[in-house]
Image (cartoon, rainbow, N blue to C red):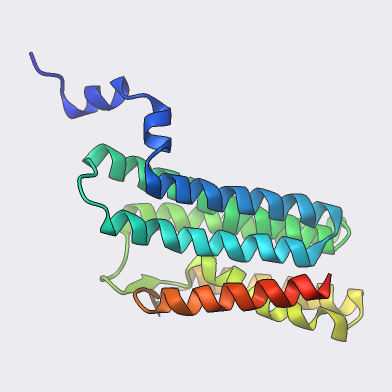
Length: 213
């Protein structure tokens, strides 16, 4: 008797799925996020920003690779979707939360904000996993990776304010973005040529934040 697809997926080794090229791309993005968390804790915020923006780059890249690859099984696509979602919790939930906490010198006042960031990510991704896109090019609410894109730009102005003032600006910005992440408004899904814009943005911001070091 032939095994069901569900039974077959259990017989396939986990590292076989992890070795799928789009999933390697996803895991590279996770590495960038982990490095961003590490450097945020150390207080090296420009390097943390660089890690976060590259996490966005690889998050966009894995989907492009997956759509262009032929011969991927349903199990590989399902695994990739789950892996991508779980990595997004780290890259765009936990990582920004740690960044905010560290910039706020781990003051208890920043704990509620950090919780809101992580909770928002978990809620949004759970909702997306069930309902998906409104259509092929429209999200409900602001996508989480856009938070990092905005943060990477705003942080260029860090030196123009005192640490106390800028920490308040970051706090308020993260809370505003969290509200927008969960808001019942339609936002565009940036695909196609927007990826080339992201490549340029990532390289330019990497150079600028690297120069700030």
